[in-house]
Amino acid sequence: RHLATIGFDMYGTVFNVRGLAGMLRALPAIGDTREPAFNAMWRSKQLEYTFRRTVMGRYEPMTKCTRHALDACCDMFDVCLSEGEREQLCDAYLRLSAFPECKEQLAALRARGHRCVAFSNGTRRDIDSLLANADMAS
Image 1 (spheres, rainbow, N blue to C red):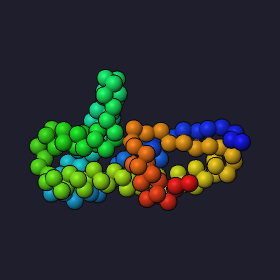
Image 2 (image 1 turned 90 degrees about the horizontal axis):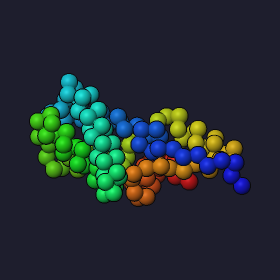
Image 3 (image 1 turned 135 degrees about the horizontal axis):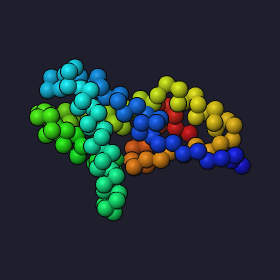
Image 4 (image 1 turned 135 degrees about the vertical axis):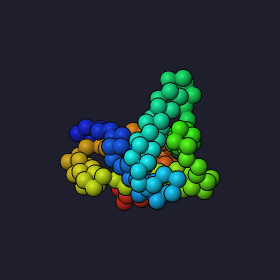
């Protein structure tokens, strides 16, 4: 019997959405100086597209919202990225690092009898990929 069911937002609470900063900085079109603003806007647009589509009854999985947000940011910042670079950045969202304390804390909650569940606009496959990559699948 579970004492409580506790839900966690995967992107931003368990997994560090700012974890792509190094990849963004390594791209000559973005670099060190543009990365913070580009990264923040990418996340902002990602959330905006997710919320707007949900309100309009036009669900799109997180992977599509992530790509559309990246494309919009490239336009906004006048950044030219190849299709390969865009795919690498979006694919990296499936391998984001968990915040260091999350694995231990989630395990502790489960050990106390709590059921932990993921809340996300991502697909089951996306979430399974994130959790497996972080060695947190259970």
